[in-house]
Image (tube, rainbow over all chains, first blue to last red; front, top):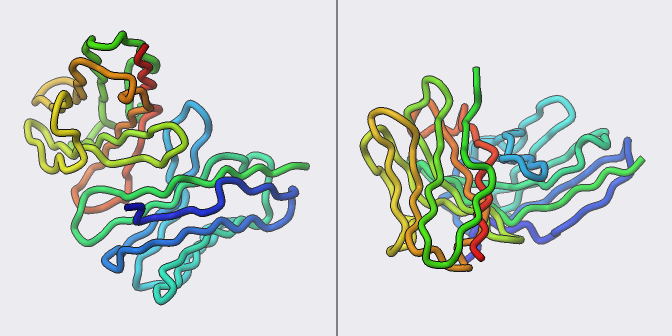
Length: 112
Length: 115
């Protein structure tokens, strides 16, 4: 039972353009969402998060949008840079739990 | 200020042997979480520990797997009698507080290969 889904295993974007990574979830109890970036042979690195009381959070080139009615969130990277090439994981948590539920990841490649 | 330290980075074990994975949390962090990433999958929660206590082990397989976080020293994830299906990347994360993902930091992982 995959509660957090990232249906696009890969995405290729030209440098300078916008990258949009999508994530869907099924558990309506999720109230906090995070995006992590992961390079090969390294651990995930926190990128940006959003609480369910918000619908948008922005940090520099990164913006996360949350649509609770559709149980969907997206990460926008503008402008995309070659150094953004990595695997991006969406993760969610519910209530006072201490664990994260991860999606399967989307591999982003930004080419010149 | 070192981050979360995991060792070894790579571990090869034959079927039936034991694997011990170590995790030293960031300084000041007393909460440790273990996750496993199977090939082509996302990370899956295994266990959450505080010093000398297992708080949530709902993601741990019922047999062969155990975890501890002693008063002194690193947290240890122990896998007895390893099988090929245990081959995965095991990540540890630590945080300074419970119930908040602010400051939740992952280590670089241990890649276990069972041959």
